[in-house]
Length: 126
Image 1: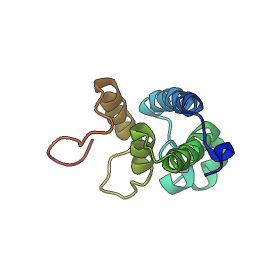
Image 2 (image 1 turned 180 degrees about the vertical axis):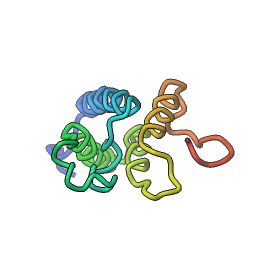
Image 3 (image 1 turned 120 degrees about the horizontal axis):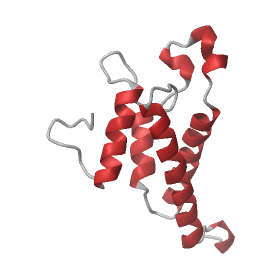
Image 4 (image 1 turned 90 degrees about the vertical axis):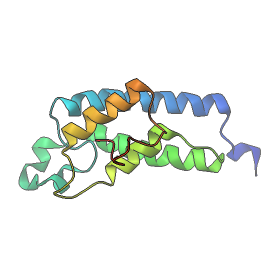
């Protein structure tokens, strides 16, 4: 691998730290009721209101998570926070919890230091 393609360890940590800070801010806002963190608002039934309800920071966070996951994969590493966030972004369906509940549960897991570990016996973190 070309050394220019490698991301320095401290740069990777800096990117991961920036992702974590932005994720925590967005999770707090989502836990207070804002929709669109885990998926685009259109998928949440926003329809014509999508322009009024758009959350560009959440969209950028999802894009950053995908990019960061790719960078970590190139370094043959993983970032549990990024991986778990992207897993939560893939949850869609009527029987799944709402974003507000997911955000609260994810914040609780982060505060307890449980990110990157298997959730409790039922297999769902919410």
